Image 1 (cartoon, rainbow, N blue to C red):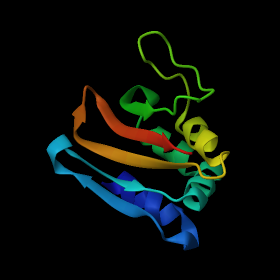
Image 2 (cartoon, rainbow, N blue to C red):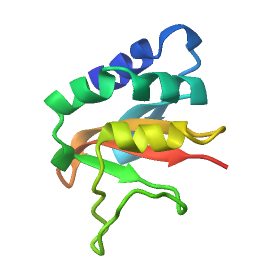
Image 3 (tube, rainbow, N blue to C red):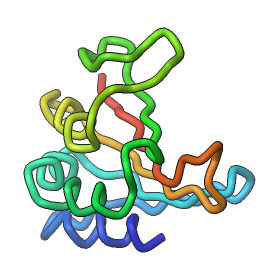
Image 4 (tube, rainbow, N blue to C red):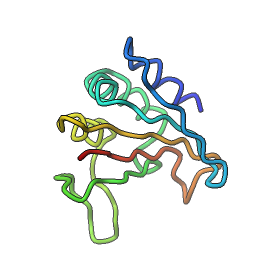
Length: 116
């Protein structure tokens, strides 16, 4: 939950982050606007989060037209910043981030890309 709160706070003045609670799936998160996604992707937060949540504990839901490499077992080979930056590079791109409590198959943080 602290990660989601930190992401919302790190978005700056936009303040359009929408809390998302999925009790049935054991996770809480935040849906970011395009501006928030771009601001966070360009700032220090992805690196700070990665200091506490290793990439092996993050999951990513990628758009079908992503350019990020995904192996034949579904493993995403990208950093949190890369996943967020790719979404921010689309005019209507954004991300939704979830903290899984308890972790889902070892994943603590999930990030989902959204665009057109």
